[in-house]
Each structure stands twice: as C-alpha cells, then as structure tokens.
Image (cartoon, rainbow, N blue to C red; front, side, top):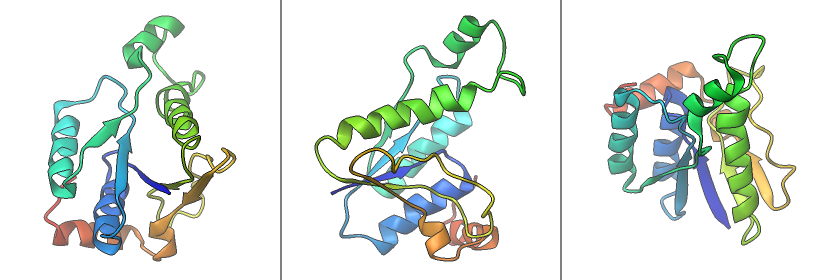
Length: 158
C-alpha cells in the first residue's frame, strides 16, 4: 500500500501532513505537491521547511510547460471564463501520477479538507483503479480553529 499526502502549502494540507506523521508514525508517506512553475519564493521556502519537519522530500509533480506556457498557449490569464489553471496544472498532473503509481500498488490519497467545509469537494481520484481517497481532517472532526491551533503548537506559520 502506498500512502500519498497531497500538499498545497496552505494551512490545511500542511496541518494534515504534520498530523499524519504524528498519528501514523509507522506508515511511510509520500508527500506530493503540484507546483505551477511560478511560485513565490515564500512558497518554495515553506515547502523546504516542511520537508525538514517531515524528514521527507516533497515530490513535485508538474505539467512540463507550467503556468507561463499555458498562458502563452491560451493567450490569456486564467479567469472566470477560462478556468483551466487548477484543472491542467494541479488536478490532471496529480491524476496521471496516481494512475502510474497505482499500477504497482494500491494507493491511499490523503487530502486536507476540513470538517467545517462540507461544501468543498476534493479532486475525485477514487475512480482510478486501486486508489482510495481519504479526508483525515474531516474524519478527525477538525475545523479551521483546530488546524490553526495545531499549527501554532508546531510553530508553523503560513
């Protein structure tokens, strides 16, 4: 079984990754992010600190042409009429990566959606054979307040 934790760099996925390390120390997690290729230096620094805290690298799964290549391709910035950014830079590369690794082993994909955001749906990847999607923050009943409290205890700033 392969255990994959999706990390955006935001508060929820950061708390999820650190909490899973504490709650499941016997499980080797693979931490994955999907950079756009145009991240601010602060985000890159955050991922580097998180790698140290997790004692594990964060695998970067990317679309080779990146955000700037897609902007050039579409001749426009992503906007409310051209909503290709998340789908093409985040969801599709992660989906393709999950398909590849699920050919070798069953996969649990952990996503950091909280209990107090029922209206949000995560990327649906459990239609990929061998992939189970889990939402531990929801399973634990964690709200935004719980996430911030946990991050404060760990001295993590977002």
